[in-house]
Amino acid sequence: LRARFSHPGGFQAGVAAAPAVLASFYGPDDTAVVRRPEGPRAATDLDANWEKNSPFTFSAGLEDPLLLIHGMQDDIVPFKTTMMLIEKLMEEGKSSFGLATTAAATHNWAAVPHVAEYLYGRLLVHFDRHLLGVAAPKL
Image (cartoon, rainbow, N blue to C red; front, top):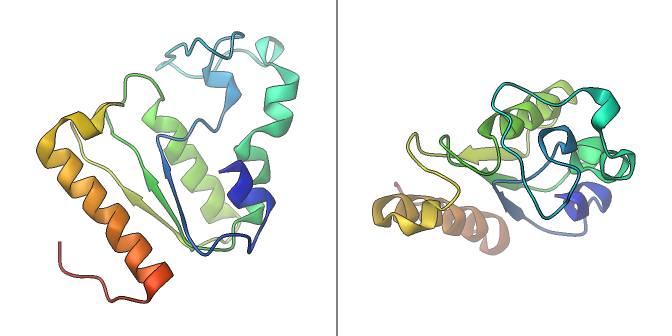
């Protein structure tokens, strides 16, 4: 996402799966993700450098088509953060994004055959449409 938002026009299309967009939902160690379903940590706990470089900070730069994929039961990256990003993109007047999700998908959504088939199908349709100009088939 950071590359997509920081370099408008640099990519014809992109996909971000379970994107980590808000540092406030994670622990101080960048290798350990802390699940915080109740909401973000207090601002005093934030890693200022991560926050300064967060994709959330650069979302206004989105120009080209972006598909967000996120399982609603993600046990690693809170689904709420993707919804917060979508809300921010809408506030910024962006419309070149879409969301593909399933209600029961966790962070490891590709491990469930029917979920993987659906979400990879959405990913392929997205790239076919925006890179090859192929009309989207009915899913």
